[in-house]
Length: 353
View: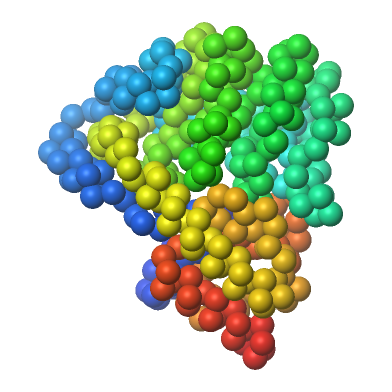
């Protein structure tokens, strides 16, 4: 089976080697101490089934997002909720961007939905433009948008996004807006479309704890939607105990970390700039990259293979629609790891590796 995502530290002999994983976009500061403590304490309750309704966690999320608890549904990561949504809606015609997160198309394939792709272009820095609005018409019944987009790290212009949401509302097109990386943007809160939920039952917003709180292995995400009937259908489209006891405990603790997100944003902003400058000095074209990862084009071939030989994993983007083997994505990590990456890239690109 060919894996389509980053973070694969298990293939071959990777687990036996000391590798630095830049292929998965997790918080370089790691799991907050309070979250780790909450997970450890929760283990004593693992002989019991987890709360299938995630009541305490849902209440905490609702307070954070200033939404009604009824509009929140938790899942086994954002990917779980993507599949549940597709199974509940059963769309016949859906649109995704190219490139974008692969799981949208994977989920749509489960129900044999016809998928249309809207190509983004390098000459426009892979930005979504107003031309996109003309494509929002019949026979579409579902649209996936990722803001900021993965792998480009490009946020969608707010005016354009609101126009797209209004047009989809008029045309009866359901919109899934993935905001899983929005917390890493300095103005992320103001870019969220949460204010559109109340008056738009054709909008669902995806969020995840995975990235900001470094709990990818625990699997925890949630969605917000004012269409309560749809949320009940989504709940019925998966197993009742999707969110484990430790994951629920982690989420509740994470939501009490008031300073951690801003500390993370400050750290990533500084390290991202260092990485961008270092890559550009090596002749690498950096594109977008406003989140906790950097998207770039490199003339060298097999860069990911040559870097792995030096103990570094990066994400080749050749399996994204619209991209080829010259595009890559790397996570922003800690200072010493970023230094090692730049040194390895310099050695590979200037000395032939």
